[in-house]
Structures are given as structure tokens and as C-alpha cells.
Image (cartoon, rainbow, N blue to C red; front, side, top):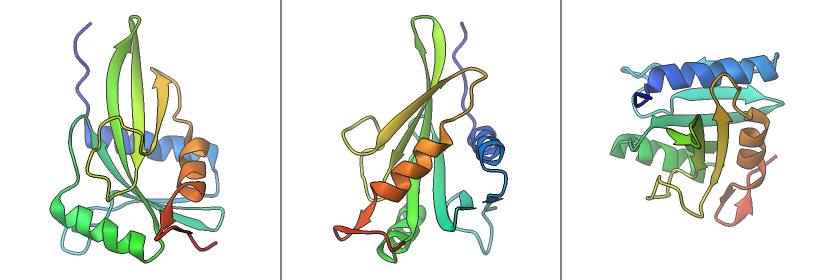
Length: 148
């Protein structure tokens, strides 16, 4: 089986589609990097009265210094923001995609004890409920929960 090439735009669009399919009333906006979007995370979602920012990365890609600084400032301000890294691998001849969700200040964006991993098979949707649940319940700023 040829190695699957990951593309950030394709994976961002897939995540947008899965969020929209699960949450029909969600506001989902892809942030286009340019004069006004430089450094902002790729995806902005409002769901259930909560705002979420996600920087989407594929493979071994990491946020730029500007992105990391912006997300750190957002997180200090109490914003739900995460780096979502998508990998593809073969598990017993089944192609699997794995999403790793971590705080932006985490230096190691590989598989570690920080964050969670969500898997899906070809044709399946991402478990976006689990993604938002993690961002709601597990992220803290200065050991204090995000304001609700």
C-alpha cells in the first residue's frame, strides 16, 4: 500500500466537515493566513456557547514561532486553543488516522502523556465530541479551569 501523503488543507476541511455534520448549528470558520490572519490558529469554532481555536498540523509539522506565541497569549487569556496533529499509519493492514490534541505550549507534538489521541479508519468521521470534551474539561490556565 503506498504511503499516504497528508495535506493540512485537506485534513482541516475534513475536520470542518465532521464538526458541521455532528453540530448542525456550530459556527465554523477557516482562518486564512494573510495580513490579518498571520499567527492565528487555522480553525475557529463556536459550539454550545463556547469558542475553540485549533491549529491543524500534519505528520511531524509543528507550529511556527509566531503561531506558538499567538496561541500562548490566547491561552493565557483563557481561550480554548489546541494544536491538533494528524498522522496516518497502518495497523494490521488497516489504514488509520490519528489526531493528537495538545496544549500549544507543549514542546513535544509527538505521542506523549500530554493530550489525547483519537483514531479513525478510512471513511469514518472524527470523534469531534471527544475533541471538544477534552478542550472543555482538560485544559487549564495557571491551574484554573477555563471560565465558563
